[in-house]
Length: 402
Image (cartoon, rainbow, N blue to C red; front, top):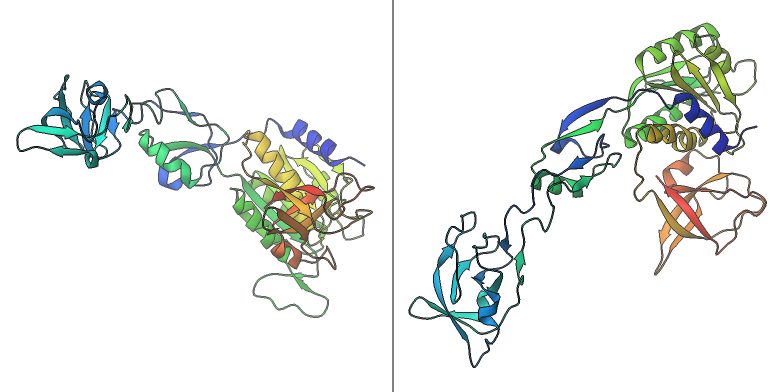
């Protein structure tokens, strides 16, 4: 049986040339979208040297000996208003009044805070404290320089990026198109929204959880259906799903029972068919992966937790590799607050709790890790790579956060 790493490598080998789309979106509509090409500034930011405070633009050398007892005396030539052009240069012994953000006039290399000055009755200003060259000045291009990389391809756009984009005059962004998913839930025991389960039936929570994780990852669900255990209907719905989406997720029907039709349905359509059937991980061992009509189809077991975990560690991983996604803040280091030897579950859902000087991790469902509600309590998961060693209280572990 394949390891998780071997399975992911094989999936990448099969689908690394899967086409991905692009689209141009407005800067205010690009939050959480993934940048499709490097964004490089075409301008300097700021585009001119400017003052960081209200005061007087000066030649720093004119103020070197200034003190409370012996102020420097400078002739004030006027004012540069915010948004105005500092057309008048200053020379030795001169100054101009500037406001915060005002353009620095030619010749000036520093700004004296207004609190450290006093105007006289004539056109002169007394300066009581010296400044050094560059003091209280933002130079042209100090923030962003022409040709500088603002955001790299594969980064997810967050609110902190928006100001930088607009400052650089970038109002439209080329991003990857949202991957389109189809979800098929299978099983006679499942009922959908609007139906009340009777004895022996359960609500189809897996497909709703999957859709939420897909949306969070930046994808969209274009088709979601519930199929009873009927092979003919199963194959018909799979064909429709493949036709409408970039990737297909099937929840349930992955084992070897008489009503488990996932592998047969995949093999019944044009394409390579199933090339992975079983992966050495828990939960999620019965994972099925196949290719139909050039598209990936993932058969996810009906275990309440397995579908979302497999989405994170297999499906989402493929998507991220296709777009060279740059992971940011997807993991934290935590202190394990439990013992688990031997480890029964390769991927364990955990809750995180901030202590005084560290983060503590504990099982999201101590009693039964297969509980559906464990997902709602979990902040992430720990990948237990060494089942024999397991986890020990006080051990440092890496937690992949949702």
